[in-house]
Amino acid sequence: MTSEAYQEVMSIMNLDAEAKRAQALSSLIKQKRLTVESYNKRVRRKSFKIDDLVWKVRLPMGHKDQFYGKWTPQWEGPFRVVKVCSGNSYGLQDMNGNTTRANINGKFIKTYHPTIWEKYAQNIQKYFPEFWENMQK
Image (cartoon, rainbow, N blue to C red; front, side, top):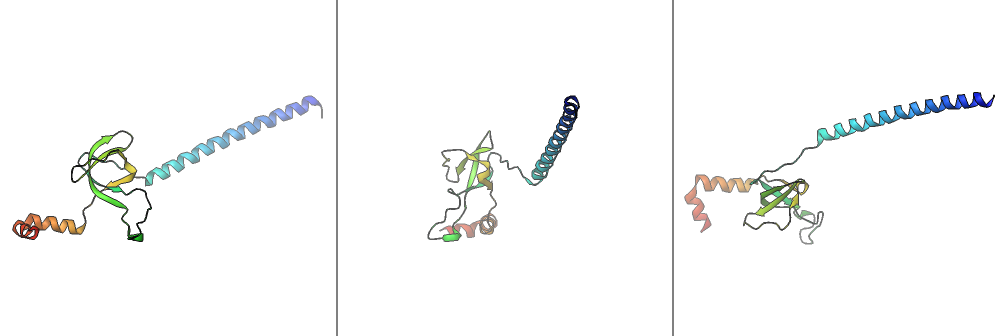
């Protein structure tokens, strides 16, 4: 085989390799896009408004108290959202009016739902105010 023929064959193979690389790259981009779409279907964005009640995670996460062991509470609250900042962070205030010293990222808080006992107490207070006042004495 002459050197010109060899160079011609190599340039053709080189063009084929470039075409295969471009095809592989487009296939990879398509697969990544499908993966992102599939992931985002299951992700739920959390957003809170001012005066929403929320639970706050107890930090450090996964820390177990020696007394409670695995029954150590993971969340504390309720807290009231007093400030909505950029970057999914929130300023919180406890029910006594004390604000947290730093804003907290939205991934460390969740919507507060009262327990059945709190709902029960609210109903007693609402429908039987005299009984509630006698219980508080």
